[in-house]
Image: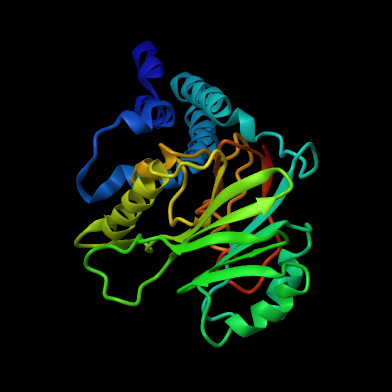
Length: 311
């Protein structure tokens, strides 16, 4: 009987041990078939849901093993994500406010989108999934306060300050046909100097029965963006965009080797109805992203992401 009490809950405890290991060492796990680890890294914070499940098992089965394992995993989760708790204030010392948003090519209310994006009084606004029919409306709605703008393909940048050196950034995967333009670079000439600003929309990812987590195009595009950032010589760099992955996702490694995001705040941006991950980003080099938060729903399948930048 004593041996049974000691071993009761071992399966649950083992599962929790694996969860704790993933929380601490996910980036060290080798690439697995179907890009399983990339998917795990995308939703890494949600592994914490194993804790309440483990505690329920511990109570129902009167398992000391499950209870201890649950508490250990809870402690590990708090250590890993402590910088995101409690939510940080959107105020504080900063030099620039930036808003980034995938507006959705199906959005029918650019004026409502613009009203929400202008809420935090941003200095710079980056948009993705612009269409030929919707672009004129955004130019009018945003142009009143942000007269300087540039567009390349389906991405655009609006600024209170003059833009120079506007250029297309080639992040197109080799297998994608011509006319796919989702990368832009422009220099924002603001009060704190020149800021090389990139707007990027990486390819979408899909979960498919035959391929698993299909990220090949996204990863290739991230590699191209990473190389562009590596060759960038500006002292201050911003990257704004829908990268279709979280900063923990190894597929975005080439980009994250060059820039960094905020240290805290989950600011989940996708899907808008039930946000589960932040795949929309404001990243920087030669500057610090002090705070990141989301704005209200605009009718897109993404929430807008706003950030404070300090140079």
